[in-house]
Image 1 (cartoon, rainbow, N blue to C red):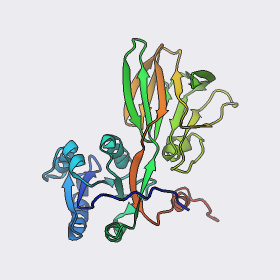
Image 2: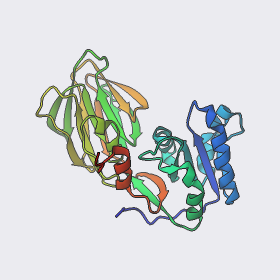
Image 3: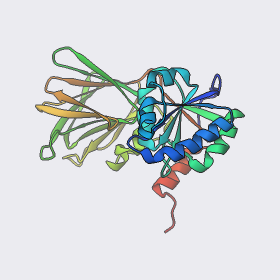
Image 4: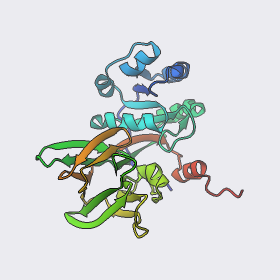
Length: 293
């Protein structure tokens, strides 16, 4: 049985759309879906950047977030991931409409849009709150660079030919030194992303925990580790420079003496789903679990 919040939207009058970037061919699909929303009495706003891509009028992203009752990502999981991070401060629920194959996050298909809108207006929907990472890089100079992550934070080597060493501490106590291609710190939502490819466990997305997964570890004794989200993780490296990638979208350089600090954010990201959506059925379909041939 799915676990979720019983939260309800204050009103369902205005939807703010973000489209898959660099995909002007999505215009007819967007116009079709916009028509379905408007037929149900829901006003549709389009972000300025997306609008420019397809030759329409749009509004600034900040204004879109303030004005909309909920936000809609039309694209894939990457589009939704970016929207969740950019809109995080506005606390608006995000709906993912998948313009391609079924996603782990963007799980409403094009064919399901009309039915979902009917359910939405009847109050038959869910708002899931997903754990977010709140982190910062504490520079040797004392400066801080802060960030939020939805899927994962990856520390890796700056060049392919070089192994990296990552020292990890939990709540101020050193517990491991990873040597290899790097380390992934994933949220449960991010467990099916890079973490899964690197051999980490799949976690139920409404769990609150960190997954630390070594990437191509130099030692066979290194294994993925799951720790509660109320711990503080500190990652550093004696190497001259390593790279930290946030959700595969933002890159930071970490130098010797810098420390990457990771905590569970005080509030999560809010995703809008079908009431009957079952995470395990998504896993079966995406990962072909249970196939007999």
